[in-house]
Image (tube, rainbow, N blue to C red; front, side, top):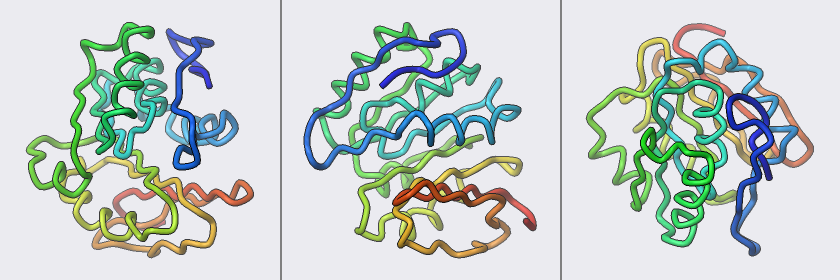
Length: 180
C-alpha cells in the first residue's frame, strides 16, 4: 500500500493484517481521487472508518488542508498515527477513536469531502449517510466504498448519486448536492 500522488507520492504505508481489514486497492483509490481531483486542494476531508488512514493521507498528499480520521479500533488508529508520522502530516490531522455515529453527533464543523469505507454486509452506510449530510458543506462530496451487492439510495434529501462505478466485488458511489 502506498501514496499514489502528491507531495508524498510513492511513500509506503503500513496496514493491519487480518480478515477484517480491506485496504482500498490502488486502482480503486486512483479512481476515487481522479473523480475528486479538482475538489481536494484546500479541503477538509473526513476519513470515516479510517483503518490505516490511507484515504485521508492520500487527500493530504494531494492538497487537503486537514484530514479527520475516525475509527473505533485502537489498533487501526495506531497504524494511522504511524502512517501520518512517516508522511509528515501529523499536524494537519485530527484522530478520533470512537464509533462513526457518536463522532457525527459531536461534530460541529463542516466537511468538504467525506470518505466512507465501513465494514461490509452490516448496513452501516445506510445508517450513517443521513447523519452525515447535515455536516457537509453545500458543495461537498460524499464517497462511499461498499460491496457491490449493497444498493444505496439514488437520493437523500437534496443529495444525489453523481457517479457510481463497479470494480468487481467493490462499488464506489459518489454523492453531491443537487441532481445527477
